[in-house]
Length: 168
Image (cartoon, rainbow, N blue to C red; front, side, top):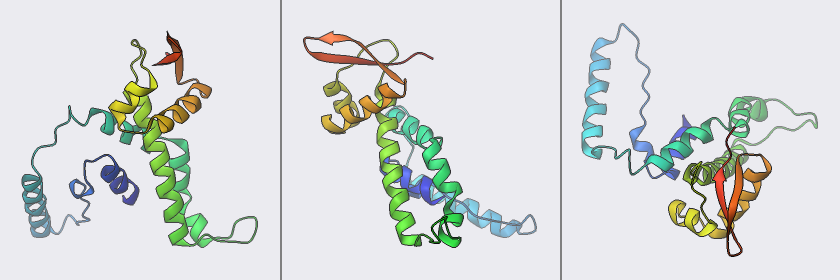
């Protein structure tokens, strides 16, 4: 839940839209109270403009499915509580820093991929404008995504390559 909350904040959606409450089936009144509280909070936040958040939502979904993130989330307890092959554990604060860095990198890479069309080639500057990431960051992720076979060069405008999503 912490990772999802962090991603929602990165995406500009806001972690305050994420709620989780554990309620027993025997706690009907408590459930009703929580439901009322959540509805009030949602009303105060207003509607979520899904069309304006199309790219960030796609990037959040892809980030949560990234093998690196899934591995880190699945290994949190193991990394913090048990010793690795070198006889060391990782401090929870350090794990949180590593996770934050990985979330940011995977989210930004997913945002670049979400900004690409499968048909119309786009230059680095265009992708940078769509994602609000620096041109340098976009170019670095495009190199990685091209190496992974997820994007391809579709042609050139003068010397500037146009990138598209690779068709699987």
